Image (cartoon, rainbow, N blue to C red; front, side, top):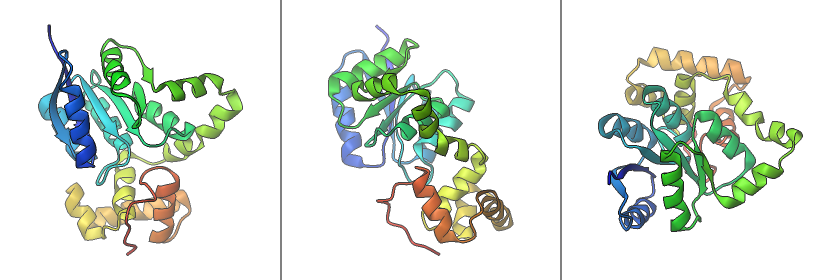
Length: 225
């Protein structure tokens, strides 16, 4: 029997180790790699080509949603299941818009996590029971409300979203340039475009926007420069 290969993308080591131990108990599942940030997750998928990625949303350097977009653009056969501590409708809408075929709350039982991996590998979608039940109950108005942030974020290019996250994490233009392999002048142009598109004119405002849009978590320790 061919095992389903899995990549774990989660920035908290203890959580990542817990998922590994849990999945290693299953005969048909194999953890082939781990990533502690979104950029590492993209590189690991390129190298390891896993069947399924368990992807945390809130990760440094590149958040899970943008990592999902980049992975699926390059490797559309890969299945991504989002992991999140938050099951808000907007998070679920953003995850599916990014191309994820599953969404699991981190408090989900081991049995359900394993079943999610098996189901998405078969080509099905899978949501934590509480999330699935709420999605079924949403009317059109609620869906529109949940998708507002997604619509706002759709105005940003992939590179602008990357630059925004790094700025919001407190990185100066020089650091952002080094991280992304681009010139400082290019970073400055992206920063200017972001401020123009979002009608925000300072770094603190960009950081607040990144938090409200779910690009970074409010619990992240930020240094405003």
